[in-house]
Image (cartoon, rainbow over the protein chains, first blue to last red):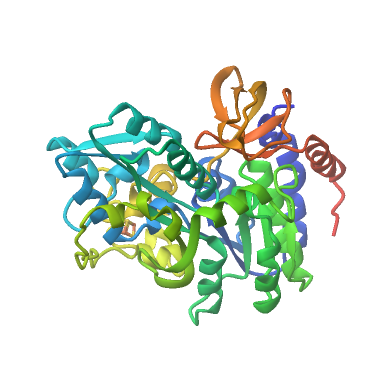
Length: 360
Length: 80
Ligand code: SF4
């Protein structure tokens, strides 16, 4: 067992699919929260196997896509500073800020390092003691424990030239915004498996009850996705609104408690602006005062430029499931991965990028 | 971003602090150093899901088998 191939098995797919066709009698909109799942649906062509009555809506679970423009502009400002090395996950460097992206700063001589892990960013700090190293700490609950751990490691090592520029968010707060909106179209959710590996799924139970919306914790492989859709449709057809766990091999109700404790130790929840969506109460994770010395926003005098969003980009509506990428007049014409107007076109988890890559 | 890849733990470097617990993990033959502080009970031979260099959970083999068994049973019969 390798926990991959078994879940890409065509035989299993052939068995699950007829079940969905057999139970469905009406139109349902199902939103997968996670951009990784959006890409998996489209890459494997799973969306095309589903009955026509199912419309997949693509959720806000793409950290690169929802990172506010102000934070990107701050990262760009930092990267342009003489003595700063800015470390970022690769997806972030091509996301347009108000005026430019991190890659153009790098081309002009700014020191931008692409890292795979927060640990690599801390190593950059150790190897460059004369420089200020800033890690652009973006992510959802899946990534927050890793970001928390390097802050604690930096504190233990007294790595004073290391700071983090945070843009971390939590999923349930965004789901509530979508569900409570008058324009909400979502009938059922597939919750993001790896967010739940960390957080468990107890937080979703009150949401499912309050908004009468089934929430199925779902994995990332084709068989998982189909199984998640089946569970969701069964609930909808049977008028049940519960939290169900499809991804049992990696998710328990309580989640990874020690990871949760570490998130709470290092970060606190604040009201936070999501790009294209707006401020969501208690949805952002920023450093606690105990770790203020590792906070890039406190270490450096950064300008709070009132950032300008592109007027043509409707990514915010796409991230809330109100529109889909082909509904955007710019899609594929003015806006392409080479000339993106919005983050959803560059991120490897962005819905516009998924449609551009797999559905043209 | 929330991509996590299953890998098998080949060896573990125990440490005084969980902050420094790490191990070598094989992803279908490609071996990488992985932080194991969030899966203190993980042992050599276990599969873990790895995200940005950190194991975030142990994969439960029993649950995995049971889920696969559900699909086998679906053979032609529509189950409500
Ligand atoms: S296609 Fe481009 S402009 Fe349109 S919503 Fe997507 S990112 Fe924005």
